Image 1 (cartoon, rainbow, N blue to C red):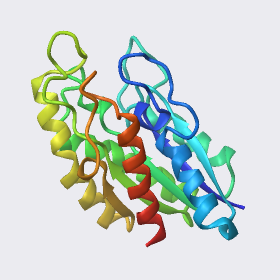
Image 2: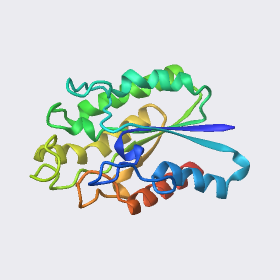
Image 3: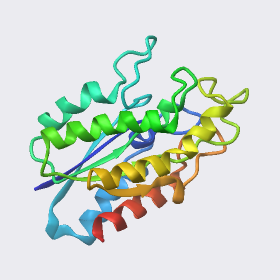
Length: 209
């Protein structure tokens, strides 16, 4: 059986905007991708491994919310699942928080740390690097997420270019989630059900190309 690891944050976990609950199986993009593979390529016998965590960053530590640094957990995840055929990496949104005051290039350095971990531990695995959806223009305003500021929106829009360059450097495939989906109007941050469907279809097409 081939395994595809999906390592990301709340938009990989399937966080429902405005509720804090999780989308059901068949609604979050990871599960839709699994069903697409089972339906369209049953002979491939591929298993999706969901490793999404709300609040996860690339390398940044929030003293009030420990345990969210991707680089602290990724090595153990890679080792615990054994041989992986493909690793889908989509992180960076939480790195845009005002707490970290990070530029797109600095967030890219965090992603590069994770790419190096993958290359060291799972050198034969294919990598699909995904730059996340943009933050909504109003995410920093009252009623939405105070962890972000106006500059965070600009930073999120700069990740696509940085990630695409890293994908070339590390011989990874690349996809920009922002080319396909936008955040919900409810929280300016997380995917809608429709967004999950659209993103899943885009990822499936990329993997099948």
